[in-house]
Image (cartoon, rainbow, N blue to C red; front, side, top):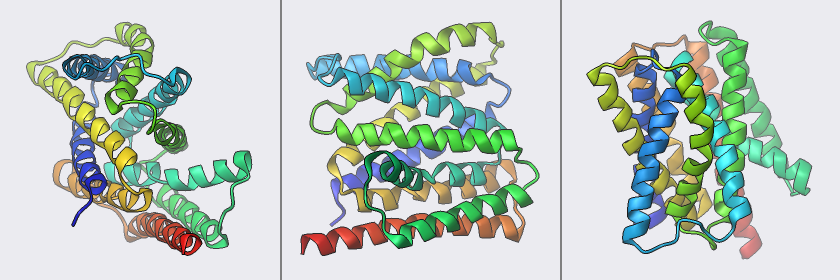
Length: 284
């Protein structure tokens, strides 16, 4: 039987994949204008649902909630910029090296144990990034750096969400994210505001709605599911990105770029499996 965490993650991946397609299509709209709409809609939905469920929006672990919001807005800004300027498949693939960034941060800052095979897989995934950058001429060094920044900030935000699983409601975590994002996005969006067509308005509203539910299901998945099985489902997003990039944006890649994507995806999945095996041995 499929666990609740896996089901939540599947729906999260699906909603986020739709969001990515819309943001890429809206490449004529400034990033922070899109973020502002996404924030306002998500904030409204959160407050409505929290009120109905009679849950205080202010949470318990306020310091971690604020930090999750700060790193979340940094990740979102880098990610939306990357979506608008980078082919969808490689962008989503590179951003999803988050597990290796968490691994390195844990080793350097927390002195956590790392399996030798994990270092090998990290090197293999990095080689995959070099292949993509070296043979996909549409990706500049600025765009690669922005993608890695999005992955780094998202890795920290996801780690904080795991820390909050026993203290705060998923909607409270998302509400704090919008609370931190709004005062940052609003003035920047006003400075670079562009006129919108009716279709733009509809798509911007859709970004807010699908992103909110993607974030909600992601939070529920990390709070209720085993990290190994949930993470495996998360990487279906790369498959969706490649498929949607081909269907909607005519994205096609040389075999070397495909090899780079394969190296990254394979390394990520093997890392999850080796970590799961190591944990099983420790508990037996």
